[in-house]
Length: 230
Length: 354
Image: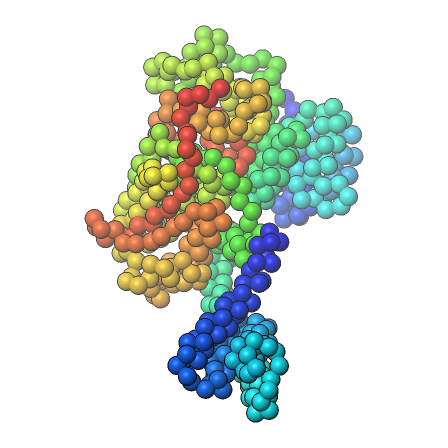
């Protein structure tokens, strides 16, 4: 990329803005940070950001959810990453359903946030031209030949298992909510428990240690995430 | 919620009624033995005192009133009326009332003092724990950060990395401690509303193991969870925290390079899960007390900088999810073993799933 990525941070806590400013600058990003949703909207009207980072608990009339809603209503598809607090799974799910791309839970490390940002941007770029083969470690999925291999050996999947895995691979690195997966793979009319059983079966087929998964990761109370290659 | 609340509020009064009823039955038996009715007043007083000590002034006064009525109705002539024929019995009844009220008040005060003393004991235990557990990691963080600021030039790269790692690690400890405090507060304020779903046990233990990776860096972990285990009805978020706390506990109380075992089996409509370590085990007589908050196995347990909350949270969360936890020592070798009893679903096979 020729110009540096621009990141807009919307967070009311000055120490967190400060540490994000330092870390992002060190990574070569351009950053603008504001303390409330209105200021964020003003920035977005003037300037195209590549990623928006939103704290859900913003002060003022417009909170983080309102901001996500406003951004998506304006037709913008800019990746949105949410900063949320612990034990607020409902808030995370709500933000994701409203169109946020991903979240990190406070306290978070820079590495984690950067990974989320990269996954969100990669996904946006992929939508224009999806790569036909996904590889992570010993695992590989060829979307053209409909072939899944682990350590070079073919893995037999049922059509439903294949659809589920394909969906996870298409969004590699990004969290997918239970509801989203159920809608995409089953058409919505199914219970989460079936999804859980399918994930268990899939892990048994593709994970080296199914009881300690490294590929299909669970985001407790939210959904699943396929680990993107580092 | 409100009916449960009303019931828990009514319970002391119901027990008081039961105590008065017991006094009445005892008096009826004594009456058969031709013992003078005036003595029955003492039997009723005993019931009232018991109510005062156990439940406080309100139930005791309530007990006094029904005792007066019952005593008059069943034992003072003319029987089975609320009237009194003999003047001396009016005096008995009057003083019975006075003694009942005064004794109730005294006993209730005693009870309040005992409660206050218990709260004080807990509060001071909490403050000791808080100041120690907050200060230890904080001191390391402040110390390491200030070294980096003041002597950055003279530090070797290895020393700098070491200080940075200390800050990161100790901040993680502080975070776990504050999370525990928050969980305990949520439990005590009744703000825990479990979201019960059918959950795959291996999935939840997998995420807990992943979160505990740093803590378990020096331990080996063996997980033995059958692939065909039925799903369990739990709140996945709360249950992950339970497993995390148990892993944290096992890592704390067993030597480095020892193994932690996770095992689950189906057992008659339930799933029994065990987490065993290779530490010193639980001191005799402590297997229940370790679940009390701010209790730590062995008083000399300070250096481990636990919060004394982890296991209390485990039990609180599990009870909120209609599950259970018990602690014991291993029979095959030294070490503690925690057994969780979890409600399983009847059907968890993939067969028949769309």
